Image 1 (cartoon, each protein chain N blue to C red):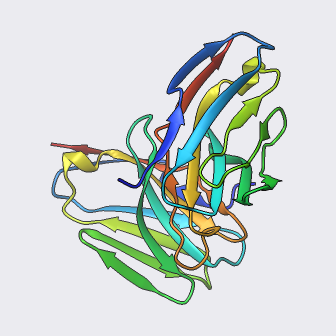
Image 2 (cartoon, chains in turn purple, orange):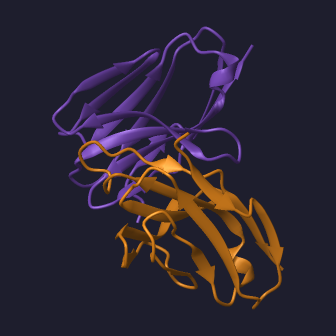
Length: 108
Length: 115
């Protein structure tokens, strides 16, 4: 059962631009997490936002959560070529369920 | 260094030949899980374990078995692999199921091909 769905599926931008990815989900959650995956590698945890939080920052990452709309967004500011990867949201209900991901390509 | 170790990284096998993918974590995590990743389908949970001797089915458990005899190890067993189990597999662990403070640590993945 897919809980989170990311939008867009793919995103191409130039270095220095901001990248925004969105995640929508279906049921109530304990928290929502974002992960990054370089091609074919393991996922790496980026940030966790609890259900009672609305916004969280970590370096160039900004995450928002709107539980009334059951949606979250991940903003990467001043993107770099090294940010090229797939990004997944994961919702924690009674288990961690991942979306299908957004493939981000950052061109130098 | 905190890590989740999967072996092997790559495996090609024939239909019906039993295989085991090992997973070990050194963080004393209670919760461990297995996912498979297929193009367009994201990560789907196969099995999870909340602690030693406690395992439960995820979303796609058919054709797989797991065991949790020790806290650090959570092997994935394919008793009779079939070509539709060709996929990229990930093991993950966390302190909890993800609620509260939990964040998941992932292994590097096992790319399995069943011919």
